[in-house]
Length: 97
Image (cartoon, rainbow, N blue to C red; front, side, top):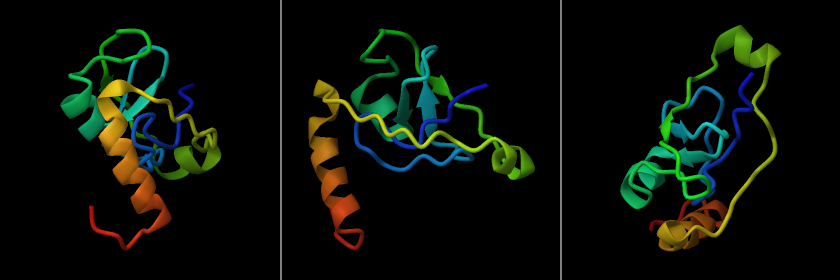
């Protein structure tokens, strides 16, 4: 069963278990669509593998098998600017980028 990690590894944006914007590699490294496509060009910076859409888990299945709570955020070169903006927005939810 997939872990469904709760946030993008680059910018820390929330990716709930039913999100259609989550991309993963075969090791389940998790990225938002913006980081995965725009900054990482569809490749996982950890293993070099292809990033693919993470299947969403919905309804009772998500309720009975919730997403992981473990937040993994790493310093990937392609996402440095994005991370700074995201960290600012997480601390200040009403802030404009």
